[in-house]
Length: 76
Image 1: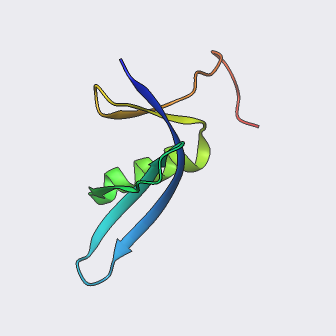
Image 2: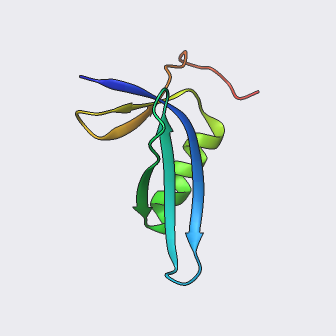
């Protein structure tokens, strides 16, 4: 299983196309990757990236994950 650390992200919305876009870059890679999202997907990704971290990407399964957190950890 290959993991890549996500270094940065960008949120976008095309007024002309009424389309949400989520952009992200991996650490050490200058390529900007783009996902075209439904409103629900866009909201979930924005929430994850704004409130959790670090974020990693599983290249085999094609999904994002947060760093492990201890059980019972409260929000500060």
